[in-house]
Length: 186
View 1 (cartoon, rainbow, N blue to C red):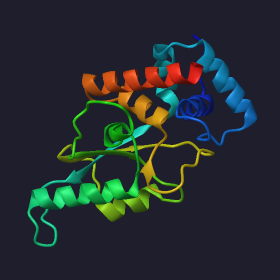
View 2: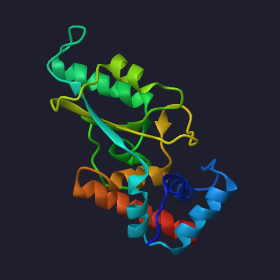
View 3: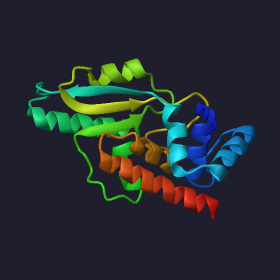
């Protein structure tokens, strides 16, 4: 199997997401097309796995906010996070044909363009303690722009599911990526 660099990986996932999704250069598009033409879904998953880094944080538990109970405060904070991120993996599985149950106590997302990581973490009081609701911030490379909060491209969501916490997420991501690859090749 040949090496997939991050730029080719991102471009390939955007191509799998459907027409008009990618803003990559013509050279990257051609390289990604060549990879997609000759790779199995397992090779694609293995090739794109190193394209991003994930920062695991938590919404701290045990701190009532504005007189609300701890659980209510955490749910409200997670809802606020979902509204400000470009959602992926389990937080965006509704954008794919999966039978996953939505996890309301976790958030997976990329920071939107022009949002500073440190400011975002401070604004939401996110910590790295192992005690709280899980928040995974995925790193997006320079040159790939999806604009404001919402959802990542479908191919990115599927690949991020394949890096998930459970075998159900991994299986759902694999099935979605296989469907996209079949559609792309047809």
